[in-house]
Amino acid sequence: MSADNSPTPTISRVFDDGTIVELVYDPIAGTTAFAVGRPGESVTIEPTFTAPTGEHLVPYSAKNNLITSGCVLLPSDLGDFRDKGDLVAEIQSFLHRYVDLSPLFEEVAAHYVLLTWVYDAFSDLGYLRFRGDWGSGKTRALLAVGSLCYKPFFASGASTVSPIFHIQDAFQGTLILDEADFRFTDATAELTKVLNNGTTRGLPVLRTMTNRHKELNPTAFRVFGPKIVAMREGFADQALESRFLTEETGGRPLRADIPVHLPDSFKVGAQALRNKLLAWRFQYRAIVAADPSRLPEVMSPRAKQTSLALLSLIDDNNLRDELIDHVSGLDAEAAEDRAGTLDAAMLAAVIQVFDGSAAPHAAVKDIADRFNARSTEQLGQPMTNKWVGSFLRRRLRLATTKTGGVYVVPPSERARVTALAKRFGVDAAA
Image (cartoon, rainbow, N blue to C red; front, side, top):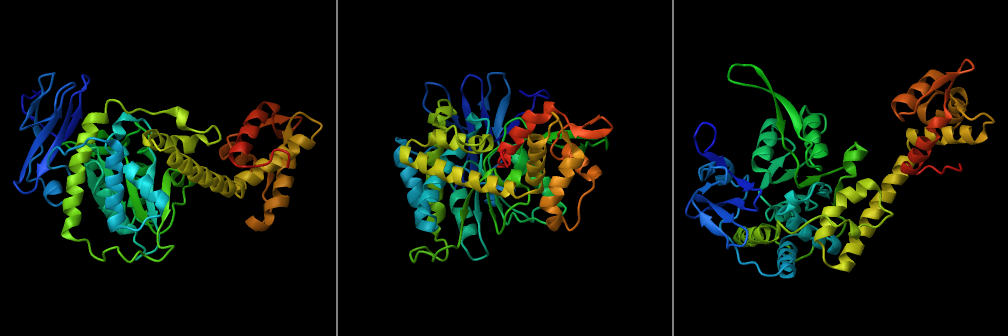
């Protein structure tokens, strides 16, 4: 029992002894129950569950609006699962029937669905994204892939922020976010926190709540988990952009066999697959793990972090190689974009001054001269030495000291300059 001796409404739990408890919802009977898998035993459907600690767990009510409305989708029973390869093929066949994806992304999406059902076995995740103009099929893709995921929670960029935090924290499933171009709204910063913090376990979002006595009560909301978004453009934050595997929609004519409206068989098929995927979770949750040997050395740390969990679940060597090539291509594009920024221009100036100076340090005045020669046209005016010194310290985190009456970047910063140059794609010999 819990501290107040009352039952604990529960959606899912994984216990230290390997026992897994998952909520199932039968929409025909209008009932909820637990699927319970104990190590070495067959999975059973039980009305309640008593934890090893004595805590008494009860299922969320079958009348909960999030469940009855389909805002959150659940398995209805334990499906028949035998072979991982067959399950991936069945998922891919389902997606192919209802949405037009590129061949690579169709396979990637099928494996991402698998990943969502065991994501809590990993410490870092990437996200999926469908990006394109209205009418390009991105929302259909979101529905088709999202309906198969682990406890998918469907929301839009126009949703109130508070329930997104609360539902994500309570259900610990897959956030399916449509129209994620939530620019110029008060929700922007809060939803961006969910996306930025949600890739790594142990980085909750803190929000200040009040209790019934109106006392401030800071609360940590768990936002770690898989996420699939649809949007028209990209995020201005390049760090956030780097967290996505993206399918560009609308770039080719739609296949003629894609139904304009989703038939009733869509929901039936999605439900049957969620049931099989529940069986996959019970069988594989304890044995899947990150496999760093599947990562190439040439990938950036962020690309490795984003793709490792997915690569760890892909058994097909050719598909892994294709995904690695795709991620590496995105990595190269990001490096090229960074190389054109003010950061890169400033780093190039620092390197040139270090390399051309007889002194061991790089004078801020000389850096400013080099930087202005490159960037005055872009900025519309030359920047002062003071502005350049501030940029070096605040933006690039380089130390400056005063030597002989002038400010310089000391030789001790040379290693950091080299590391930053590699990150921003700046030729150190430039």
